[in-house]
Image 1 (spheres, rainbow, N blue to C red):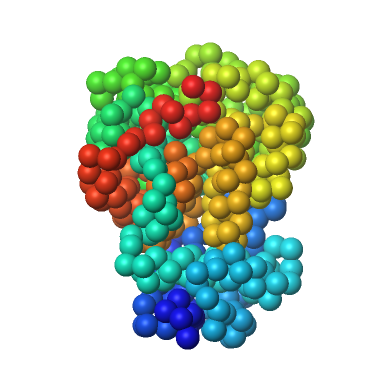
Image 2: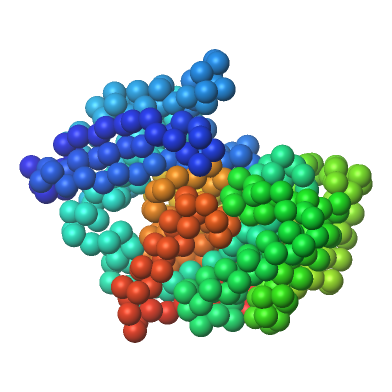
Length: 427
């Protein structure tokens, strides 16, 4: 028996940031070393994502996970006992083969991804290393440029506005810590502005202010106002990042902007976004058109990819094959990396590797249904992703990850490097 042999796998039901059940897994190695991780859950999901296994029925609105926990404690445990945690790819492959479906629907993507992350944590613990350092394996890494939500929208705010995330990025900051300092001032300024204008109505799923606006452009104006009120120059010190999440309100040639009471074809949608790029200091746009609108992605990237990061989320669903196809077609220049979207650590890492080698921007991302799990903070650093998207600058499930990055930067000391503007694929 080696020190990295898996001796036990245990699943349990815990709770996410929406008060919904989710899966936590604890993996034990031969010397008694343990690793633990929790599966997140998304609200805005792509059709190609790994599927969470939920119980259905009336209990907890159908969101209970006793079946997924059962998968961990029976099928997955039986599959992994005796395997070597040093071979993450073999462990993930074994779970995928045990599941036997194309979208992890039998055992549950939530069960598989939580186990996959727990194995990774256990392996790092066996080396007595923080996870980021274990992942870096001695290679130089950078602290990521954070994308931080100021106003929530779309599926995260009862579709009060069409656009899902209105975020800020601070590429001119000198460090990760300074980027958070700047964001804290902008978030505070946005809250004061909302209060002064009678719009302060609480926060959305990810901690951004509830979007009490009459148009999508009002939200953009308010964001610029907050950046300026905080003492920064829009477009120079701080830029805007949007997650359009277009699949949530349309498909190819059929986009319904409810807030603006407008129906657009693909050309009209591209014109709308082009106008926003012209009028606002936008550095990054995620899912500008729907996941089935490949031609729209290609056209948007051709027109704006040299001045804007064009991210695929639902378009890629953290799938290396889809990223390869995009590279050939020039349909984006950045990819969002979500572990539970892919369903395992190995698959997510492969999507990031393919994108990075092509010069794409890579952004490790949280989900709207999050937990206190810190895995993605370590992945963003250890995998040298360059960017991290967690949500807003509020709510403990978000702040836990930002704060963990501060600890990592401090641990790096004088060797800490901040990705900043270099993380963007068009600079």
